[in-house]
Image (cartoon, rainbow, N blue to C red; front, side):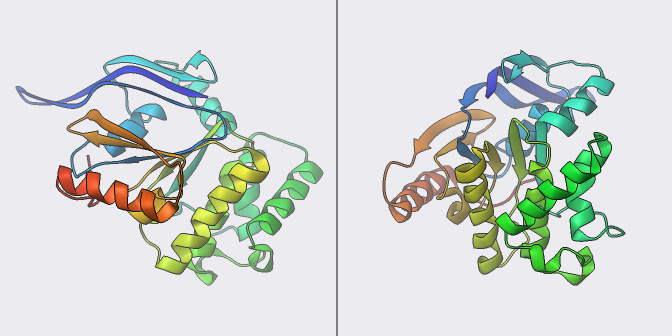
Length: 251
């Protein structure tokens, strides 16, 4: 579903160059729930921004469902983001002037889909993620967990090839964090959704099928969950401690 090949990204400030991504290559298969972790400065956020083409990379390929989206004109890339990529952000990015139901419908409004089809799908997603009781409420009237589940539902409206999630549990308490992770798992199980999540939260990552660990812009290791979730979280924590922590970053 997502195939990143030999991705490189360097920032230049004056006469100084700072390599951030160094020859990264990995795949995310359809229906997989994959996390990216690593210490501050490892390149997690830059990687996500390059995959979504919000920032350009220097060289390499980003293949989405077999097609290279690197270097596409912005108009074409905007259509791909709306139709084939779903986004979930740490700060929710809901429109305050729209209620929950209207926020969820927004991607299909932009795509000019039939209203009946749109509303039917939005109601189904509200039921699936347990937010049907707040459909008529506005973002300011609901909890952080409900906001993020609304964002997950919105991301799934156009049945994207992959959901790109940027620290989706970063602003949530433990109960809301679990509700959001459950939403991703439900999307994976019932809709065969593919999720690629950048996170510093080892608890959230422990629910994933696989975790790609970055160090200094390169892949340090990849860990796959083969058994008990708690054992997998301990394994993740051990790797992150060796790298110098698992704190959030702003690469």
